[in-house]
Each structure stands twice: as structure tokens, then as C-alpha cells.
Length: 459
Ligand code: GAP
Image (spheres, protein in one colour):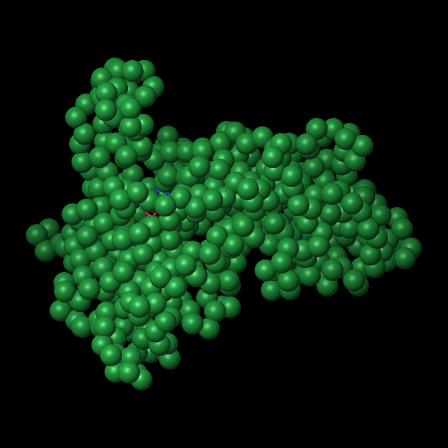
């Protein structure tokens, strides 16, 4: 995947890390993210997405789907439901093992996950913030409970799914029988997951309701290493291709005591932001854990018979598991920049240097003046044509400089200005967000010019 020629690679070394508050504030002010149930005081770790947020999320989801499902002949997609049979979560190990251990500071009352405490503090039983004494660790299960049925006594307790990928194992056999897939092949899904996180926080980073994307790739055991290495490398390149600051990405291997109960080996793709190095996606060596456990708990044989050799075996699984929400957050942290005044912009500006693929609004159409009817009519005609092809905004409020800055702040890659010359020769000014360069194009050339730059399947 190549980037469009117009994109200017950013020098990353001197760029300061963006404070999280700036992103939280921009998100609320411009309609990306709102606190959920805000009029009732909110619920920690739960957010809603506004008009621009939903566009950005849709673009993120679509791009992942396009690159993981649509362009791979050996991968198909499913959409499983949030609620499943409760036995699923016993088989998966989540009822017994999906736990966090917590300690509280007796002095400042802060709460910490034991696995997040610095080793020294753990050893000395000392709060990392105030030095106070810590309580004994307590264990909490992260699964969110719910009930199926209405009659008391007949209701069945189950769980909102704690990881979205379980549906893939449940549907694996149906996919195999209803499609022409043969091992090695993969199943993808994007869907909500729920966790009673004991320490939600850092905005979208750790929420209680969030959206995961998973590839579960089923292989013969003898080919596990090959496919693990293959997907690990591909997913790293994928993330590199969507950010500006590529030196803020690395792998971190899980130590033996932090591996999830289902993983024999795991690498996190981590991004460096003001939150430090943090997980963006996990690449997990799940081996035969999931299909073996579901075979055992359901009594259904989930083994695979090779059509040529007739060998029967439980497939092993490579998992790549990331999320829409962390991608949303890290893309904003990566793209946000405050530029001081310059020759090109005397007042300075805030700019979201999002890849044009992800920008919530692709083009803004601006008449130079709003009190000149012909300018307004022509601009509205252009907008009405473009909005059928991509997300376009019409804006005639305030002077042109302020309107450019408003679009820069939400990451709109192109602004089209309709001026008096347009009325003479049907050309418009196309201003590009990152370099603030301007070119003149005929109105008829606009759709192809813009589409080529904002649609990933054109690259
Ligand atoms: N099926 C494997 C699994 O669930 P995980 O590392 O717990 O593995 C995978 O989660 C991805 O889901 C993470 O890399 C992250 O992108 C996202 N994720 C996990 N917990 C999250 C939370 N509380 N809030 C937002 N995203 C989360």
C-alpha cells in the first residue's frame, strides 16, 4: 500500500507528544467523542461518538475490512452476536481466568492493577504516588453478566462477550462447511466487547465497552511458526502505513507471567504517545486452545480432515487482535499538531494530519463570499455533486482563513474555493491541508482528482 504523492512525510524526532487533554477537548468541541450519559454525570470508561467520530470510525473499520478480508482470498468475514451461550465462557477460560488483581493505597485511596505496579513498589508494598501502604491484592473477574429470559428462576445467566473473537470459534465449523475455505485460512470479525475494567481511563484507551477487530487464522500445526511470523510482520506494516510518526511503533514480547491464559506466545504492537508505550494490537499464538476446549465442552468434534492427505487434526490458530477505539485514539494523537504562525498562515493553526483515507470530511466547498449569489449557487452545485462520491461539507460562515482553519482542525484534506474567476472560466482553487499548497483545476476535473487522493482502492 503506497501513500498518496501529496502526503508530506513528517519529521518525528522534534515533534512533541500531544497532551491527552488536547485530544479530549478537540473531540468534544468538534463532535468526535462525547462522554456517555453526560447529563446524568457520565459513566467512567463509556463514551459516545458524534458526527465526525462516527465518520472516522466507519473509515477505520472499512479500511481494516478492505485490507484484511476483501483483498485476501484466504480470509472471510463474519458478524457474530454479543450474547452467546454461557458455556462458551466456561470453555474459553474466561469465567475462571479472566481476572485482574488489584491493590488500594490505604493513604491516598488510589487503586492499581498489580500487573501495572513497578516491581519495586510491589516488593515494598508501597504506593507509587504517595508512598502509602498498599492493601492485600484482591481478584476481580472482568466479565459483564447479563440474563436471558424474563421469569425469575428460569432466567439464564450469561455474559456480554469479553472478547469478540469467541464467535469465530463458534462459527468456524459452519464457515468451513458453507464456504470453499481450506486450511490455511482465516476468519475476520469486527465487534463490540465488554469488560468490567477495574481501572478504566485514559479516555478511549481503556474502556468498559469497546470494539475489537480480530483475525483468527487456522493452520496445520507444522506451519504455525511460518504463519505467526507472516501475520506479525503484515500487521506491523499495516499500522506503519496509517501513521505519520512511524518511529513510535515497536513490538514488545510478553513475558511468561503476563501471557493470557490462551496464549503460548504473544507480541504487542505498541505505540508511543503521552501515555508511554502502550498496546495497540496483540499477535497471539493461541495454538489449539480454543477449538480443543470448545470440542471438549460442547461434545462436537471440531477437528479438520485434510482433503488430500486425509490427516485429521485440531487446527492451530494465529490471532491478530486490535481495536477500533485504540486506533481512533492513536490516529488522533499521531495526527494532531499545533503550528505556530508562518508566512503561509499568519495566525498559526491546529491541524489534524490524518491520512486522507481516514479523514471524516474529505472535502469542504467554500464560496469566497456568502453575499454573492452566483458564488453561493456554484459552490452548492459542486458540493451537491461531490457529496454523492465522498463526505463533503459546504461552509460559507466567516472569512476564508477561518474556514480553512476550521477544516484543518478536523483533518479535512482538501478545500475547494469558488471565487470570481470561477464564474469566468469554471476553475476553482483546491487547497491541500498539510502543505497549504493551492492549485487551480477545472470543475470537471475535481471528482477524479479528489477520488484519487482520498480512496484507498485507488492507490
Ligand atoms: N482476543 C484477544 C484479546 O481480546 P486483548 O489484548 O485483551 O486480546 C485485543 O485485546 C485488543 O483489544 C487490544 O490490543 C486493544 O486494541 C483492544 N482492547 C482491549 N481492551 C480494551 C479496552 N478496555 N478498551 C479499549 N480497547 C481495548
